[in-house]
Image (cartoon, rainbow, N blue to C red; front, top):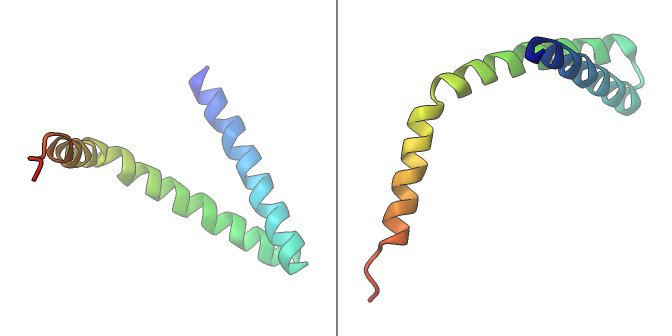
Length: 73
């Protein structure tokens, strides 16, 4: 079910990006180009975001804990 949800989300996002590009630029071929770049860029971004999330989460948690337990001056 999660895979179907992901496909449906991606289709709606592609439609939104296409419509946005078309409304702003008025050229369907440029809107399709923007949509294509967005699909590729978003997929690559998500891959690396997911891959390095644990590192980022640990960094955020470390900063938060350092701030939370800082010494009051």
